[in-house]
Amino acid sequence: MNYTLRHTTRYHYSAPVTLCHSEARMLPRKTPHQQCGASELKISPAPQVQMERRDVFGNRVLYFAMEEVHKTLDVTVITPLSTQPLSALPHASSAWENVAQQLSQTNSFDLQLYRLDSPFIRRNDELATFAHSCFTPGRPIVEAALALNALIHQTFEYDPSFTTLATPLSEVLANRRGVCQDFAHLAIGALRSVGLAARYVSGYLETQPPPGQPRLIGADASHAWLATWIPEWGWLALDPTNGTVAGEQHPVLAWGRDYADVAPLKGVMNGGGEHRLEVEVDVMPLAG
Image 1 (cartoon, rainbow, N blue to C red):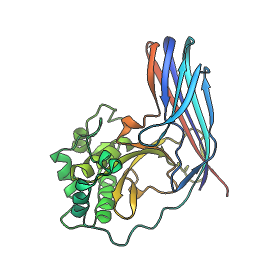
Image 2 (cartoon, rainbow, N blue to C red):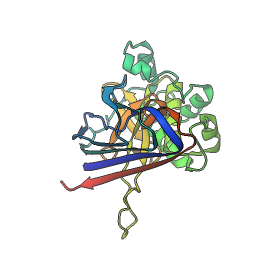
Image 3 (cartoon, rainbow, N blue to C red):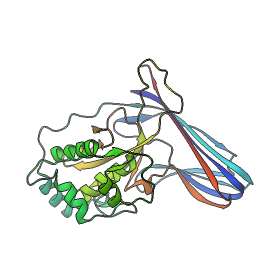
Image 4 (cartoon, one colour):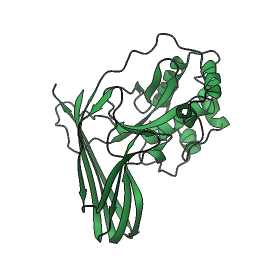
């Protein structure tokens, strides 16, 4: 699939900002299944300092600083990219307990990083119990992971009004509702609570309009899913919001332990008062 991605984050401040230091994770990363063209970057007002680096997870991070007074901040990134189909899932996989045992003994920093607690996700017995409804004794890990993905999709309600960033996973689990970020965090917490490795993935999902209606510019939204480690195959990306494997229609932006590692835009400032946030995301498919 070929796309042009356009992601705009805009802040309106009630009082002047005199100094602003920000980090943006809005530049898509290259993966084995995703190739990115050169990004067009627009920041208004223009920053006095701007540079790019890679974080510990390999994500592209844009740092910029503004030292002039302003009352709005507008960051837009436009990126052409192409995605390829994923490899076929393995016909057979190890029992999940064997994978958990293998992971407990590995010295791989990349794998251990995604087995531990993180700012928004704490392993606990409640999450382990939830996981065990799918991760039954001896069940192959791929089969169990797909079952967990389907369970969340089928038994949880998508409800944007229910949660905020501060809503704990215990409330999401008890009320069986939330948004894509909550469902990704829940699945990751369940997987980590039974000893497996799982990471949070941010990106996009093309939104198809109703039949006979034109596609609305700005109607697409940022999306979130997860990936869990499958030995001898790699990271299996799962989208519990839609109950699918995340594939070529899921352009990847960044990944980390949870949302805290991949927030699109964050920083510190002097002044500003109250603020209003606007986000516009367009995932525009291209022919060819």
